[in-house]
Image (cartoon, rainbow, N blue to C red; front, side, top):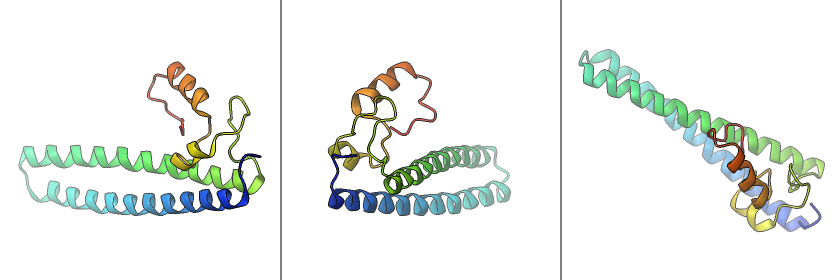
Length: 130
């Protein structure tokens, strides 16, 4: 983390906070939409409407799951900022460039290690935080 100065750390911390708020808003909106779809499915006995409602709920659940995964990654990144280990690649131990952290402030790997991870874990990258 030696490549980050205090101003950069503060900026990245704010990026993490902003992204967290966006994700929480998205989750609230998605849960509200799911309630609407459940109501639609229970009111209209039409099989097409029921099918649409079920599909919408499944897609919404996937989106919420993705958002929750990212929220956990953000929390981990904040803990690393506090402990002084933020910005270190979990694979090679080298510093993750500031530019990459600006794009993905919760990145756990430098770009080369992330590319290698994606090549070797082509099962949907479950558990990866980029």
